[in-house]
Image 1 (cartoon, rainbow, N blue to C red):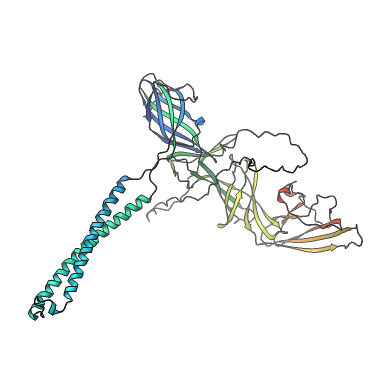
Image 2: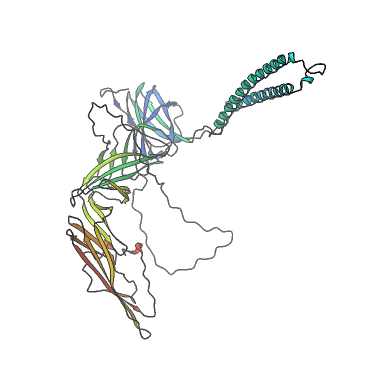
Length: 569
């Protein structure tokens, strides 16, 4: 019911402490509730149910049934408003056991009757077939066997015999058609019932019930809101990055952020007010403790006695991955020829950002199926003026890749997720977005740039052969990389190459003076990874030289190793 401001009285909240049971004198009242609003986190959801109350005088216990079994009992909160003085006491939950599935006895009874009827009709069919076969044999007998005196039948009586046989066979044929049709109907009905019997029998999974103790000083009506946190739900960000290079170097990048929402909570989310939050509800509230670390000599493990199982390490918690399958909405009906065509745009969420989290409110009321299928919503759109660079790693791939750097200007972070890459209207591929805080930058790749050509060639490799034991082996290497810009506009190039590093004092690696001075001597804090950034005018080229010398004892063999995990050490 609608409560006016003058008649609405605030509910007095006494406590939310959990107790073992409801008050002994409080009558239980089954409360009807519906899911009204849901806030979905990446790893959980907060659900708000609306309860309409009509309370008698005195103490009562409202019973809200059908809550998911994964409800966190400590998260239950109750608030509301009523016409009349109402106070809320204890709030608790109890587990409602699952209802075991049972077979439909009516199906078994009907199957038994149908099979009996089918056997009876089969007997009728057998009798009719035998009668038909006997008449056919009679009609095929010689004329001399048809006369009572075993003499040939008079030719004048042949017509009468033919008519008698024909009429008999026609009657039996009609009876067979009817009997076979009835038998087919019974067979189809039996098959249908057998298929229905093979379906999983109906039952009800385990659930929870919320018990809310209330005390009304007088008869009261109003509305309560029951809020709780539940597992089995979450959302994943999915991005559409659309780069438009029609204006040459002055490109624009549109980044569309979507939320793929899924839930397997066991409850119905139909017509709910939905919002998605960037807060990780189950991640934890405090930083981990850092304890003293000791370095000691390794001791071999002690043998385990037979029959004693080794203690296993605790398993780390894992989160279930959600597969995003973009939901397609029904296309609107085509307008009449007289009406002008108008652009159809997607609805977009409203951002509510705070200092530590952000929430996107989905417009209108939505349905989220409980079968785990994904439903996508557009939550934000931002247009950037990106910094474009042709990224080249010639020692691994002689291809220039177009990359766009943008800065997150929104109040909400970019959460990790898949990015659908489109360049000038063409789908290029799928990339990944890392966690990008507001004000932080990120680079996205947009495929190969075929108008920036790259060649890398070794121009010197010199080795000395040691002549006596204990001498040093030396090897010199020099590479030249040539980059050319075939665009009609200037292009910024970022070239990355590497020089080996040594973590052994017996191996010495020295850069050669011939090396082109790099603009970045440690790309992404990776030792030995060098970077050159430069601008190329149209139809211009540039050479980059990388040269170094390696020395190690001649009686030892060396090997090149690539270890991404240690790149930043």
